[in-house]
Length: 50
Image (tube, rainbow, N blue to C red; front, top):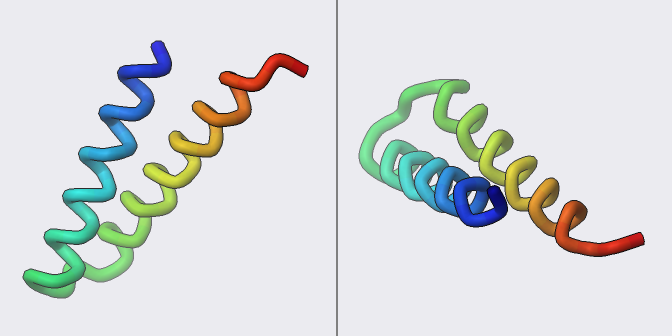
């Protein structure tokens, strides 16, 4: 499950970067970045055993 989370996060960051530098798509691109960052944080939090 962690691998899928990281793959989704990486894909979203790539899509965000492409959209950010190629053309202006408004808030949708930034929403993808936020989703990617949340996915990465969830993966880091779930990996630690508290």
